[in-house]
Image (cartoon, rainbow, N blue to C red; front, side):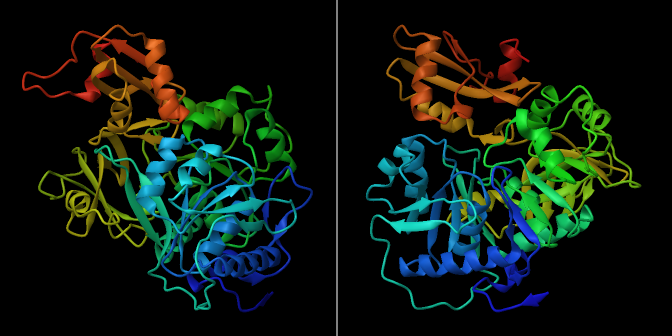
Amino acid sequence: MTVTKSHTPGVLSDLCAHRFEAPALRAPEDPGPVSYRELADAVDHLADRFASFGIREGDCVALALPPGPEFVEILLAIASLGAAAAPLNPAYSESEFAFYLDDLRPRALLLLQGELEAARSAARSRAGLIDVMLEPGRAPSLTALEPTGEASADRSLPDPDRTALLLHTSGTTSRPKQVPLLHRNLMASAASIARHYELTAADVSYCAMPLFHIHGLVASTFAQLAVGGLVIVPRRVGPARFWSQLEEHGVTWYSASPTLHQMVLERAPDRRPDGLRLRFARSCSSALSPDLSQRAETYLGVPMLEAYGMTEASHEMSANPLPPGRRHPGSVGVPTGAEIRVVDQQGASVPEGDVGEVVIRGPGVMAGYLANDAANAEAFHGAWFRTGDQGRFEDGYLTLTGRIKEIIIRGGENISPYEVEAVLLLHDAVMEAVAYGIPDQKYGQLVGAAIVPGVDTTEAEIVAHCARHLANFKVPSVVHIVESIPRTPTGKVQRPRMSAHFGEG
């Protein structure tokens, strides 16, 4: 195997700097894979192209692109310049794109040629536009539609402490927070995941999760690339084609949210396909029910390993082990990518078996939210990051018992109730509003809402209003029109109790 000089920074060199012919990435829809040599060449070519547009170290580049090998090539090319890649959900509405672009202030926004008019409209005066044209088997073609800056002559490799990835996470305020993940954070997490699941170059990962999420990027993609294996990156994930793609491409493991696990099981063949080469499946992004875990294991004939991850930790913090290690149903396993403690309100560790707040520290954990002193003061106990989750340790295994934060997690998507409430209150008929989570077997939670109207309105009208301002997964599934919002004697709204109040879930 020959290794030659690449623009790729040292901390990401394991992902694509090795110039050899083994397959690195493949979309099932394409005629063949992208080799590690081709991946490295594509990253070099794209980095040169970005530099010609004026992208340089310290810049932010946003992208709202479909999944596929090209997404990975583009993200690595941005990072190789010392710039920060900020992937956005293509399903966002125009107002959501406007918010994220205002918050990120990117040098440029990358969009598929001729698509996403909502993003194009939002980008006016907020970011230079770069059109991306895709042709399977070739590096993406980039065309700058609006000025992004003068060509950069500085091609020095970025420092490991440079931000490689900028992601937003919903918090307990109406404003999502920016999570800056450094090159060293991402590679520490990828290495930890590869080590825990004993990944090798012989493994084949199936990336079932979106690439604009930390789950799909770090677990399914970076961890497998770091050991020289193959990542299957479908352009579309669907239950109908899922099983045939696993079989055809010799997939040895895949990771998904419980929602997706349930969807593919519902559409699975009556009997397990004979050609499956799986050695384990992984679940993360929301709680996995013991019933779903057992059904998946029974059908797949391999262990279903539940894990615990979050954006601020560059994904995985704990996971159940491979056999012969013990798997504890309902537990998120043993610490893997971080040190974990369970503490009281003063930050002191509680006895084993007692419930407290889960706090973490480790090489994958961010140093702090970007330009948000108030959030950082609340988020850390000294060097320990407060996850906002409650849990307990028993025999070294962590079990989560609830969320201190009030985030709604629908199918692995984090939704701030405050963001939904802000949209509800934009409607002229709405005087008061509250959003909350409704337990749901398929999605984990759905978004529920209650409003106090000032004039006559209907549930359908309110839902339609939300659909104009929010991505589909954030739109309330149920809207209650009430005379008053249920509150405590002190006037506080208790979102965790709203669902029970309305007899839901």
